[in-house]
Every structure is written in structure tokens, then in C-alpha cells.
Length: 152
Image 1: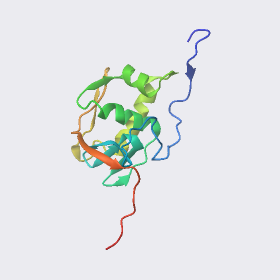
Image 2: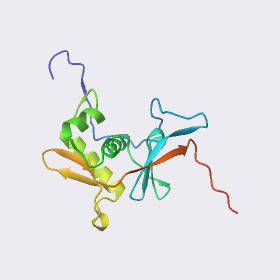
Image 3: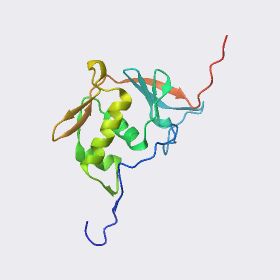
Image 4: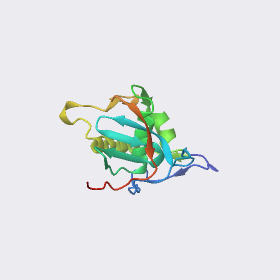
């Protein structure tokens, strides 16, 4: 970086785990209190407006950068996203190295159980980038708040 550069360098790997329901800016909501559609894949449901990932209905702890990475990949399934594009999207206005991206891909793969039982959700194209190869279905809107199920 040259003199007078406004970009800052941070430790991209040291990230606290975010609260699972951190709000997204400008999350679209309907008058009935519903948020934007959900994306389902494998045993997971991703609710971008709630910044929430669930596996079989149970919230999955995922740091903010790993969540942003998953969202970037799942929005264009089947496309290999170049590393530089992912770095610009996930760390805007911050200079980071490729190692940060590899770290978060590894965390994301672990959280998704990627590679277990021979199934693969995230693929690597060496020297190019990463892609989401799972089948993604849009499943409509989700309630704005969770309710505790009542027993009959």
C-alpha cells in the first residue's frame, strides 16, 4: 500500500463468532412481518435476512465472514467464483491475503460437514477459486421470529 492509502490491514482470521441472528442492513420485510426468501440445500436452510443457517431446523454457529462466504457462493450455484472476487466481496476496503479465504472456506466446509459421506457442497478449482455445487431451492419466506413449538 502506498502513502495516503485509506485501506486498512486487519487480522482477517481472528473473528469472533457472531450472534446467529445479526441483522442484515436493508432486509426486505413484508407487512405481515416476514423476511426475504430462504435458500434450502442438503439438510440446511439459509435465511439471509436473518443471517441464520440451520441444519435440520437447528441453528448452526457460523462466523460473519464464513456466513458472507456461504451467501456469496450459494447465490450463484455451479459457478466457480474467482478468489479475488470473493476477497473483494467479503472484505471490502480491507487488504487481506488468500490465506484468510482458505481459512474461512475450511471453517465453512467443517460447519456444513462437506466431504462427509462422500458428498461435496463446495468445490475448489485450483488457482481460480471456489464454487457451490449443491442443489439450491428457494423455499419462500420465513417468519420474522421463531416460536417455541407447543406440545399437544
